[in-house]
Length: 629
Image (cartoon, rainbow, N blue to C red):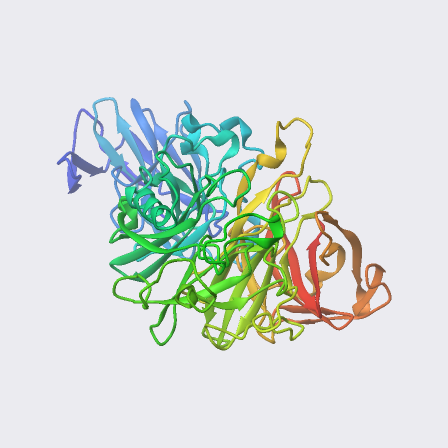
């Protein structure tokens, strides 16, 4: 390519080419005093390129370098790469280019007089980004799981997914995922700063803290509480104690969003031998979740007793309340029915139909005490862990409908929330049941332990692992991808972390669906790893595998597994069996067990990077696995 030559400053022949946006004259000139060469371009990739050019002669240079852009006739008003060395050779490396894109490029110099001169323009095109390029350039999340140094209220803008408990997540019309939660945080950082705190994200990895959605407890709760107490012949409570727990948030349409929240009154009903007072579920609405302004709509439902007014506590397992009004989940069915599902520990989980216009119960509610027939409008039992006891050891229902399978899925939290917490799931063709487990057990009619296990305390090598992984949100991105979110707690007594089990990190994980329509949750948290198809050769090597069978309060640890050539398992779990891979379905089958595989982040490796994980079921058993690097 030819060089443009420039006339000496004592005798000019200007050819005016164009003007910049600030009307500065841009001069392309022929000269006998100096030349600036058209750039050469080498080492072009999908995101970078190397530029070279040279200047001859002896101009008095103020600035020099390259300018480039995606439209012709580039100037210094486009992207600049300024060269700061003293020589007359220009070399630069351009980064962050767009794949498969044509660029226009010039070299330039600016004289001490302020005049700018350019070379001839050339072009180059970046390459298409390959699968290996995408993985090689992937940057995993870097935030620490030990967030105690930023747990305080004054560091809330750095929280990301720190201080998350009982999350509810929805995708709004503005393209953000919004997350709301129980009032719980390490060191009680939320105290005094409102209730039902929210945050949002575009990518499910980086979250922006937004603040409380409720400045103070609504006055209707105290009024309703004391109205019930008066009807029961009890004195009013002048200053009730409250707990704000587990909201659920849903998009009703693009201009209406609903939050059902639970507020528990923790005062005792009538003295040291009675149960604590009831819980209330209320409703708030907004037209714009980005505003974080919610209008309270008041009472929806409360805890109800089938023991009339016999609230004396004859033992913790006798539970005065039949239905405990906490942990709401809300669904709009394909036929546009609106349902509230709720319940925790007392007797089981119930469903009540709502009026879609008001968001309140479709049937008027009587007093929340009487016989089981009297309180029927408070809900229909849809799932129970133990039919013969009011003490369930289960809570936190979350319900979704998957149009591809035609099932409603009811996710449940089992056991205590500190360490033993684990997640189960069952399903039904109908919103109000019967709900069946993977073993065929009817959880609606007969009750019993729900299978499969979806999450459980676990520990991969080189980590503390996680416990307390339950009370989940399940949601999709509108493009067929499903996700699971919950808190995860660190185990007790992690060295160097004060009260380590009070560290509550928000987890987001991908969900895959088995060929027979059951959701499996990936063992590693979501990190937006590129969704590049996995080849069979990548599966060869050593894995960590966890048998996630139920073990109360214990972290399940990993065993080794080696997938060898010839589709043989050559060591570790399932040693001696065969394996096969279905690349179309992205499923790995080992010893007859179908496992969904996916690329995720290896959170235990330092530094973190991408790896391959699997999850699947075999009867009541759940298996998790991770490929070692």
